[in-house]
Amino acid sequence: MRIACPYCGPRGVDEFSYLGDATLKRPDPAAENADAAFHAYVYLRDNPAGPHRELWQHASGCQSWLVVTRDTRTHEISAVEYARDAAIASAGAE
Amino acid sequence: MAEPLVARSALRPHVAPLASPAGAPGVTLVEVENLSLAALAAFKGREAELTDAIRAAFGVELADGPKRVTANGVSFLGTGPGKWLAVGPAGTDFSTLPAAVTDQSDGRSVFRLSGPKARETLATLVQIDLHPRAFGPGSAAATHAASIAVQVSQLDDAPTYEIVCFRTFAATLWRWILDAGLSREISARHAG
Image (cartoon, rainbow over all chains, first blue to last red; front, side, top):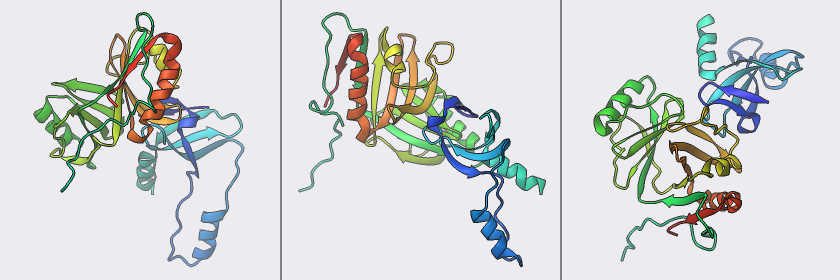
């Protein structure tokens, strides 16, 4: 599998470290159902068969954190973006 | 009495052997000494300020990408978004630049690999595409060679490559390059 780093260009997956699900949002600790929300946030994961947004770091390269949209059935990568850009876009959408 | 600080090579003859081929060398490996190195990280939103300061101080037009730009003997290698590795002759002062500047002069070792078989020698160690259409003079890449983190850049069409690694890995990387070059008439010398 190769990931097209926005800075370095396409590189082998051995240069990257995988963190996990990029769709998680930290719940509001002041909310009434905070215990249940944090339990879900920390422990409960979907296991989708299909496109999945996940966090990777180009650890052996430019060290950028990336959000990679990968099809878990075929490993086809449809989008790679800087995690910072994704976070800014997501904050702007709210 | 305080011992004076002396810059010494990380390579010693028993850990980083020398090599000289019987005939003409196909590839030459040397250690570059007496350098001043610094890691630069631009402050958030102040990249233009750093670009201006580097232009004024060194006459170098900073590139935003995995590139190596050089002027007046001072080079800047792109190592990541908003990050560069500055390389200049010993005594070059990068500390006044408007960025997070970390001196790396005693933390890195710098090798140069050149000659007609330099490309195929390096290609046995790194997984990036070194074909001239993908990687030429002025190209730079942060990657790994034999699992050792390196910054590779190309200087000219000889081709000459510069390889920067952390000092503690220098002897191991040297041996890897020597092994890769033994079947390619490698000539290797260092000052250790």
